Image 1: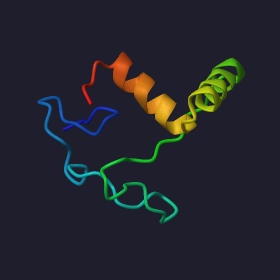
Image 2: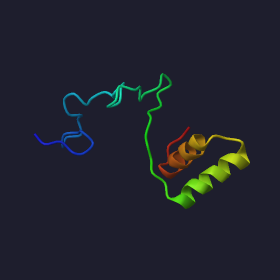
Image 3: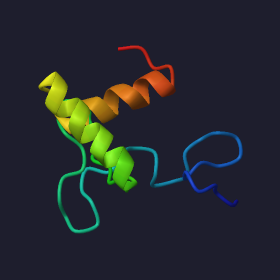
Image 4: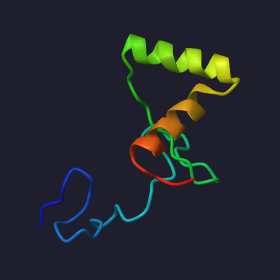
Length: 79
């Protein structure tokens, strides 16, 4: 049976071998932290990167926390 790009069968069940999140990346590095966060690489346009950098500086926060907050707001995920 074919799987989608996200590794799920058409019925919504994970494909064999993809049920859990990977602990190690392709080069052997850890991609999942003990607190449940997963490492992702995202390419931003120059203006987006500059805006994130500026917001982080102004709010005394990390760029990662600014990006996580924006994603959670956009996807309507509660804290």
